[in-house]
Length: 186
Image (cartoon, rainbow, N blue to C red; front, side):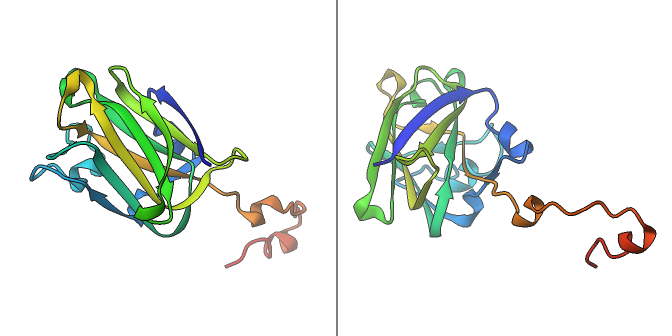
């Protein structure tokens, strides 16, 4: 069973800039349950908060993030803006994970109250480690004000940055000119 925690943060990209996590959404195949023409995956992934995905069909509205190989996923960050999107803003979101569409397990249902900004959803297994999965599915179960279609402005998927084994090895300080000449690999 996968445990999930969430928090709203002002800037979900801060950990990316600090080098603690890496965005891996480009390594996945993205699909949507529906979208209006010109409001699809490209707008959801274009790093612009002015554009958005807009669903065009019955709920739940689904975003599928399918990786080619089993991938460590630490968190999913969703940008939502109630002030701009009103009844199109997600209210209840379910995050699911699995190896394929037929074995998805619901991690947790998250209630959002008029969100403005990034919502960070931490994905942890029972030993409090980031999950390893092939597929992450984000399902919008309901919208604010009982809206039918939904807007999501951006989604980012993060994996932890693993420490490099070489950097963990302590090399002695080379002080002579002769030794320093061999201290780097060319």
